Amino acid sequence: MRADDKVNILMVDDQPAKLLSYEVILAELGENLIKATTASEALNVLLKTDIAVVLMDVSMPDLDGFELADVIRQHPRFQKTAIIFISGVHLTDSDKIQGYRSGAVDYISVPVVPEVLRAKISVFVDLHRKTRQLESLNAELEQRVAERTEEMRRREEQYRTRAELLDLATEAITVRTLDGRAEFWNSGAEALYGYTRDEMMGQDMHALLNTAFPNPREEIEQHLREQKWWQGNLVQKTRNGTEVVVACRKTMNHEGNLVLEVNRDITEQLQAQEALREAEKLAAMGRVAGIIAHEINNPLAAITNTLYLVRNHPSLDDTARHFADVAEQELQRVSHITRQTLSFYRESKQPIAVNLPELLDDVLDLQERALTSSRIRLSKRYLATPVIHGFPVELRQVFLNLVGNAVQAMPTGGTLGVHLREVTDWSRNRRGTAISILDTGTGIQPDDLKRLFQPFFSTKSTKGTGLGLWISKGIIQKYDGTLTCRTFRSNQGNVTCFRVFVPVSGGFNVGSQPLAGGEPVRPEVELPTNHHAGIAL
Image (cartoon, rainbow, N blue to C red; front, side):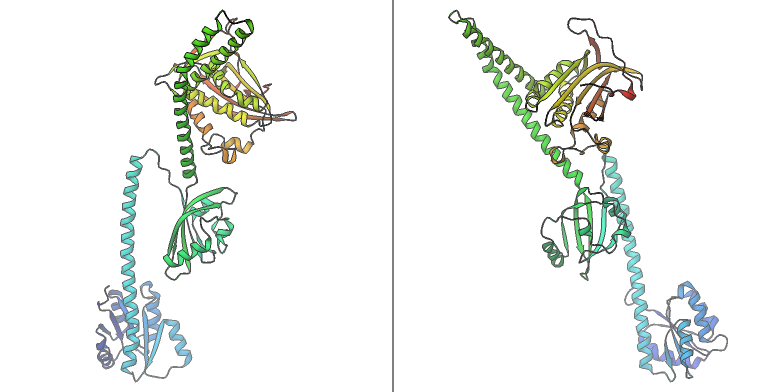
C-alpha cells in the first residue's frame, strides 16, 4: 500500500439516517466509506474487504455492538482491527469495560462532535495505512533477501565446483550492550567459544572470553560511537582455555545502545601464513646452502690436490706427513658435508634407488653436533640394508624431522635409538621395512598422542609450526606406508618410539642387500599389536 492509497472505513448502524450523518462527517477524510445496517451485512463486508476502522453502534436489533465485536475478534484476520463504539445512551463503567473486553479501542457519545469523530478515525486510518505499508516493505525485503540468498547460493555452488577444498570458518554472531553484556548468542558462537546461549546471557562477554584488543578498548568504543562500525583482529580464549584469533566486525545500532559483533575464527589461517613464511625462509636457506656448497667444491678440489702433492713430498718428515694425513681426512669430511648439502637441495624428478642405512647415516651426520652438545648417546642397529625406490630429499626430510624431534625431547641428555629391520605387518599381511626412532626424553602425553599428526598441532609451544609430523606422515603415505607413535612410561623413565613402516609393494622396494661380512639377515616378525613393546636402548 502506498501513502496515497485510500483505506476502507466500515460504518455499522441499523438507522440509515445516522449512517448518512457519519458519511457526511467523514467525507473530508477522503477515504472509502462502506455502510452496513445489520451485523450479518457487516460480517460479509469484513470477509470480502480490508477494513481499517469499524464505526459501530452499540444498540442494534439482531446483534448488539458488543456481541458483534466478539464475533469479529474471534476471526484471526480481525483481531487487530480498530473498533469504535457509538452510543446514544449513557454507558456505565461496567458497560465500557465489557466493550473494551470485546475489542473496542474507543467510545464516542451522542451527540457526535464531527471534529472529534474525524480526529479519532484519522488516527486509526493512519495507523492502518502505516501498518500495511510496513507489511508491504517487509514482503519486499523478504523478496530481496530471498533473491540475495538465491544469488549467494548460486555463487556458493560455483565456488564449490571450482575449488577442491572449501574450508568455511563458522562465524560467531553476538549482540551486546555498551557495557559488554550479551543479549544474543548464536549457535556459531556456541561452537566457536564453547559457551551455551543460556550461560552467556547477561554476562560481560569480553571479560569472560578474556579478549585482548589491538588498541585500548576505550578507543575502539569511541570509534564505534562516532563511525557506527569497527573491524580488526581480537585474541580470545574459549571455554577450555584454547587461544583463538578472530576477525571481528562491529556495528552499532541507530539508537546507540546495542553492538552487533560478527567474529570469524582465523587462527589456523594465521598459523598457515606463519608456516608458509617459515617454509619460504627454509627454502631460501636451502637454496643459499646449495649455492655455497657448490662454490666451495671448486677451491676444495684444488686444496685437496695440493695437499696430496704436499703429503707425498720427499722433504716431509714423519710428523709433518702425519699432520698432512690429518688435514686430508678433515678435507674429506668437508667434501662429504658439501655433497650432503647439495643432495638435500637437489631433488630427483623420478624415483631413484635409495639405500635406507646410508640415508639414515647422512641424517645422523647432520645431527652430530646437536647429539654431542646435548650429551646424547647414539644406538644404531641396522639388521638389514634395504634399498627402496623413492625420492631421497623427502625421505631425508621425514627422518631429519623425527631425529630432530627426538633430540629436542632430550635437552639434558639421554639415548637416541635408530633401529632398522625387516618385518611382517600381519594386520594387512604384507612384508616391509620398519625404521624406529626412539628417545628417552620427556615422553608424549596421552591426550597429545591423539592429535600428534594433525596440522598446526605442536607440543613445542611457540617453537614449532605443527606441520612437521603432518607432512612426514603424508610423505610416508605416498609409499603406502605408516607412521605411528607410542610412549612407554615406567619407574626407570620414558621411551618414545616413532615407527616408519614401508611395505614391499608397488615397485618401491627392490629387496635387501646382505650385511657386510655375512649372509642376508632373516627378517624378524613383528606383531602389529605390540610392535613397540620391549625395545631396550
